[in-house]
Image (cartoon, rainbow, N blue to C red; front, side, top):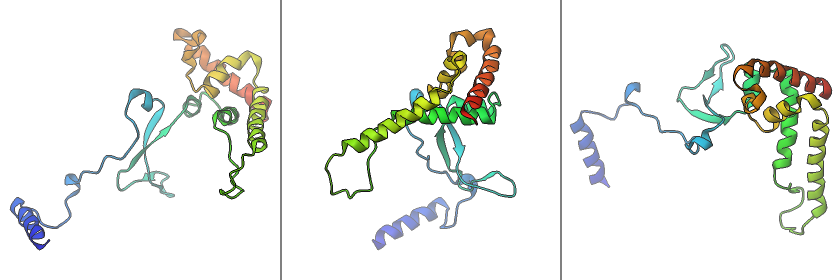
Length: 191
């Protein structure tokens, strides 16, 4: 082992570097794992810095340059653009969460020991019924005239341009309908 260390030290000295820290310009960070890079896998992902938020400035402090990805749906995009109000966004989140709850697998009862492996179909049926009840309750609040735009944005996560009546020159009309639709949904849900 001593020979290997001595040989490595000789190589470093020949290159003119020592065991000191490199300047910031020469340091290359490892590429952080951000998932699959295919176009379909990157749809709806935003890359953002990870780190602590400085309370004085409100900005993210990230000395190591670590970046991560997060999936953003159109409901959040439209809220950031202020095409949907805060109350409309909250109502849309409730509907989206109820919809996503029905898309999950059956629930598991973790209150029992894992050794007990007897199937309890009643518990899983109760969980599925609760999830469907939440969705039905939220769906009843959707005004009929705004159902296509609300379902497209909140449940399907698609843009308003995916509806034929809001393409091209009618996009501004779609923005107005989007705002009105989520305001009506918020009124119906009591947000």
